[in-house]
Image 1 (spheres, rainbow, N blue to C red):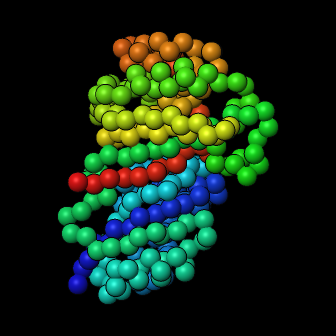
Image 2 (cartoon, helix red, strand yellow):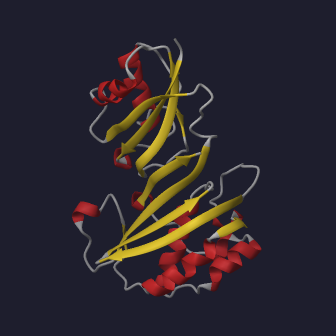
Length: 246
């Protein structure tokens, strides 16, 4: 019997060239597809909720694949984890309706971006945060972050190289939390453009450094001009935290 299997996946992206399969380099998608082939004896196409770039991590990536294997749904994650490297873990596996598509059925996604703001980098967070040794104005960053909430044309928050049809997205919530030197940015939205969260993070960092004014956020939303915003923050601070479905 043909089945549709939904996976929830956590991974450390440090040693991978992103989610999407590429020639001659290790990727998350290809690594999991190879494990599925070992377990089910079938080649499958794994559909992810979205791509993550090289060095980006995930706490709750979602993907699905079609297969006629007979393995009980809760045993699939155990079998896959036994055939995956330790920096990729399947944290849940379950059978869903054949119509489910992890990419097109996603209602919203939450990304987390970590900033390590201290004079000396914590070596244990070097691959999981962006190191900023300068003093940041946290309250100013929080104030600026709220301007992103709502439905806007986010073309100014997109890196070059994307050919998508529309750049209008809805951001439902933005939160900034600080615990000692570690600052965490959470952005929840209907969808995201290429490098959008890293551009938001980099722009907030530059605002926190007083290199740019809060008004740059509004200016970018009004003019759609990428150049009025700040840097694109480094990939290692970014995590796909959660994908929600109706």
